[in-house]
Length: 342
Ligand code: FNR
Image 1 (cartoon, protein in one colour):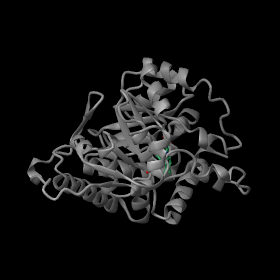
Image 2 (tube, helix red, strand yellow):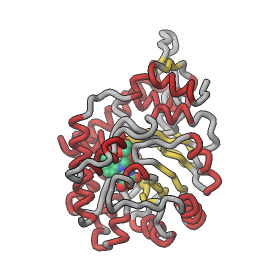
Image 3 (cartoon, protein in one colour):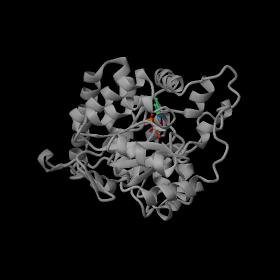
Image 4 (cartoon, helix red, strand yellow):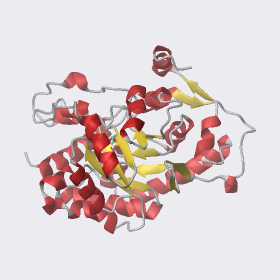
């Protein structure tokens, strides 16, 4: 199967998942204690967030998705326009397709061409050579590099990687060789506290937990073949909110993605310590069910509503949300007990 076909399959199956999703996930098990006199004035609220020496004007980003086929090049163009129009950061999909077939370069380059002044992240896997990591950054003049970890995606794939043992050493080589900050991310199964704690020693500057609750890649890979051999890997891993609770007080900035559905989920993730919050499948659905104007309207509304929530909750900055009182319910509470989280 060609790489371009695989990219198109991922988009199609991710959209089937979006339409079939119950709409519930573990973000529902986090609520804010309401303090009726906590509110502040809207002009005093800023959405800017700072981490790892970077400042973003908003704590929201379009997370890694695609590129590598004609169709996904058009998607990247529209995502880049939405990022430009709303001022949020945007990540490329895995650039492995470009390393295999440089003729698809334009389907990635469009991310920078449409968004010349924006914050753009390149994306590679943990087996990329140092040279290829550099090529990925150069192609889109990336401001940062994401390296994705996806063992629960590779495992159900007959052609998938079965050699994970060298990943940490390769991440360390790449991080030492590139001159932009390196972010390690999952693809929807979550980063444990133990994984996050290992990252600074590899030269990684930021962790994106990308947890369970939204796009499920084991399910996508099973959906690409007739026999869903690995169906028991569906819903593998930790939810995004569980990861954030697990990562309290780690010595590296943490980003949140995976199953983010609303501006309230963004606020919940920020309150749990995330420095910024990403969405992939949900933003893609808005684009593909509608058009680029629908996505611009959605992201603009999310930013406006996040500022409104900060006003109500008394948080001048996204980081101030960490001072809010939260209630943890249901299975998430059991997760905290089992992991010894206060
Ligand atoms: C992804 N994701 C992803 N991640 C990555 O690091 N490299 C990639 O190439 C891709 N490709 C990709 C394609 C599509 C169609 C989707 C929807 C997602 C994973 C993505 O960045 C994110 O980690 C997960 O999708 C979880 O977030 P959502 O979708 O629940 O918001």
